[in-house]
Amino acid sequence: MTAALVRGGYVLTASTSDRIPAVIRHGAVHIVDGRIAAVDTYDALRSAHPDIPVHGGVNDIVTPGFVNTHGHFSEGLITGIASQFTLWEWIHALIRPVSPFLDREKAYVGTLLAGAQMLMSGITTANDMFVADPRPGAPVTPGVVDALDELNLRGVVSFGAGDIGSTLGVQAEFDEHDALLEAARSSRLSTFRVGIGAVGGQSEEMFARSVDYATGGGHGVHIHLQEIREEVTATVQRTGVTAVAHCEREGLFRAPTLAAHCVWLDPHDRDILARNRVGVAHNPVSNMILASGVAPVAELRRLGVDVGIGVDGPASNDSQDMMQAIKSTALLARVHHQQATALSAVDAFEMATIGGARALRMDQTIGSLEPGKAADLVQFDGDSLALANIHDPYQAVVFAAGARDISSVWVDGECSVRDGVLTRVDAAEVVARSRPLAAQLVTAAGLPHLSDLADTAEGARP
Ligand SMILES: [Zn+2]
Image 1 (cartoon, rainbow, N blue to C red):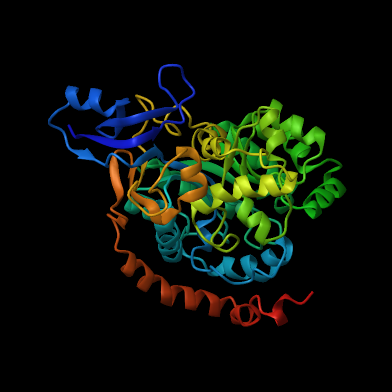
Image 2: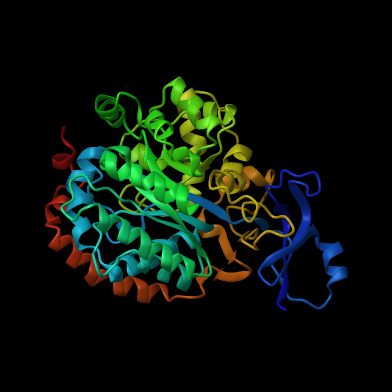
């Protein structure tokens, strides 16, 4: 049996039950064999367990691990180019040209690179959609699962399938789903979902088959929905209804569904999401970078929709930093509504933890510090400059702290980051290994011109 106490001046539990308070002053979490055994004051737990190791200090803040509800490890090697485009231009200029050249090794190294950054920003669960051309006979996506296991990062993995514009046929897409499902089944930390790139990316035949694959197999779904206005218009022209209404009509929402973005929703779409218990991933940073719009987060939450926060992909955010995404969630809501009370620090914190877990229907196992749940925790260094004086622990975490103030991150009771350093992989080695692969990918896809344009006055000119 392995056991430990993780203590802090504040333990923010994100608990919504009466048994565990939301804030425990001078608290601790008792971890046994990867699970949370108890959450209480440090004194109570220490006197009951005087001989087990203690991590953390009297000034630290301990929180649940953050749940990143949307990202793309497929973009791990193409960070920091093409940010001068809006979504469809960006897909056309960057994502499509790269897709045929992604293989299992690039998936593996790209996931190591992005996943390591996620861990260091407090993410303990990453909901991913890998967007690439399937490779018949040599599946790409198992590389994601390999890397997540190696990092000790919990994954919800999916392949963003779509047959429109592909010459490989529908079966190749499902073969890639099958390969990823098999990899996830043999993984300690990853679970599988059926990825649908977008409604507009699948033929009617394929969409129907995706619905059957998900509902028949008992799988969850991960899909992009109504990120930009053009998607809504195109889907209405093709199907007669919005993408959200189309998904309901075709039976997709019978499977637990996580919808990324949901920026352009009419009132009917909002009701559909609420009544089908569709979880929503809000991605404030990529929505701002790609100029997509502002998701109606406050209203969705009022309707009872579970809304989590996503960092989105390394090519559309581009940082894989949950602390930036959490702060941006509060800031974007406030500037949008021109109201400082539009989204509180507590709201943003809950969205990043238990809200994200609910959106993924994983709140029985992760998202809060409660007995029986997986020991996924973040420890903030209370002796850092930013946290020298904590007047309100939620505002300290959401507005004052950054990833640099995170000292340790536990996933499933194991330290993936200790004293600010990754425990399972060598960061310098990951960086070195990624460089030739990234250069090769950008050259093969014919992209060097994109970084020449960059965000210079020339490239940004409308
Ligand atoms: Zn996305």
